[in-house]
Amino acid sequence: MLSSRLHQAALFLSLGLLCSSTSNARNIICDSSVLRDSTLSSKEILCTPLGDDSAAPALDGDLSDWANDVAKNRLALTSALGMLPYSSGDVSIMCTYDETKIYMAFEVPGPYRFNATDDHLCASISTMWRIGDNAQYMNMGGCPHVKYGEKCTEVPELCNPFRVDLGGHWELKTTEMGVEYGTDLTSGSGNDPIANKDDEWAVSPYCRPDDDDGLAANEWAGAWIHTNPNATDTTDHESYIFEMSRLLTTASELSDIQLEAGGTYDFGFAYWDPFESQDEGWSKAGHYVTGCSRDWVPLKLATESGEEPPSSVATTTNALQTAFYAVAFFAFAGLV
Image (cartoon, rainbow, N blue to C red; front, top):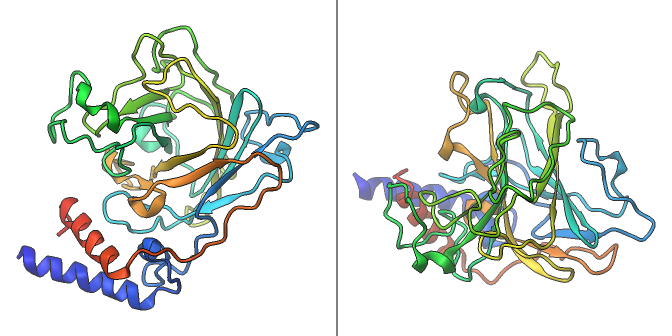
């Protein structure tokens, strides 16, 4: 049975190889016309410095005050378990920074849903940044020293090279549209008891605490809106907009990525769709992510305004090797 299903998965991927309109083997799952007629317009996120005459954007969900030279970096969203495309479309990410903060806007297409008592019936997002040199995109760092399926009570010291920063992990039920929810630099924790806009770190899905070392804080602020919350037709897709900021550098190098102008950082974005299930909303494992569900996306803090992101050129990744890797991923995820 397993051999048969692996064969089916390989056949599916072969169809993707044949039908893909791009020679970039790393993104063959995302770009394949078998899945969706869509192309990625960004392989890297460019974060533009604020000019001397530009004011930092207000965190209110209105993007009209963003500088004109800030690019919209468009990236495909695919399911974390299965690489299937998010049916409503791609996420657009805007990024700018000044001397102290990074500002990010995430625009995710999809119909509005909100429930003040159940986070699963509201949209949810998170960012993920690689801190440790060995941190993998899959499995939130992928530390092999964490027991699979069992929540850890303490992060093993051997897992330090696998650390990732989960910043701005936001569940919305206690919030309102258009309201800025600020930082908390004094509580000693990444937990946000007001807006549930938590600052976390992880080495595994089973080892994911709020920032909790002696220098911990919650350096994220944000606001969100939906562009058409009164729509009655859920096929009339508008967008969620999450507008957020974070200090470039923080006191805790254990749990936070440290950012500086000119640096390039491994980044990922996740979105939980409140319509994943009509009755139950989203599930923990049901989220959609960037990077073809397996790769970090480089995020570069450009040093000059107007710097262009690199063109989408082919990589040297062998297509057959990519297909084999993806089959292995399906098997790991329990889908074959």
